[in-house]
Image (cartoon, rainbow, N blue to C red):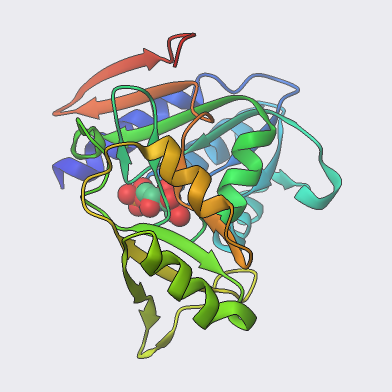
Length: 228
Ligand code: 5RP
């Protein structure tokens, strides 16, 4: 599939950023899975690095490839994080969480000295918001948080899997919040973050430093401008 070829291409190009001795944050999703495969190959070929993972699935994949995975609970910062995204705009603001891992992904991204997004061309957008904003929520506060999200203007949909509420790796639920196209993602991110019980949303405003975008077999690398 051409889209998968581009995901793999972006992942392999970004893998060059992993150097001996680094502690690397491994993302989650199909593009990140290509990265982990590639890093497994490089590890087998002698590249010496350790990792933390942003999901149980990525952790299992990395460990199966022989990569040393540290518990993030014992790590205050990583050298480099590499992860996918669902949408990324020209200001390096990303929308993540279609896979439901945005809370761990944001913790690892925020801890990273450098955070790189890997993506196929379909993920580059002029404006964020075609996809709903995923909001990981404490089940205890489900009704309260849903009402608060609606007051912010969202159509709020509880994410289901096999007919049951989807549960994250932390055993929380996810609300997919349809706001429409986002005129001011930073302002919305701040409003979401202020809701008690809403533990992590998929808007990444400041975290991303660079983008490896593969489109029809061509790689483009973009760095965040200092002004953001
Ligand atoms: C998971 C994510 C993923 O990075 C995002 O959904 C992209 O996934 P894919 O690489 O499969 O397109 O944020 O929470």
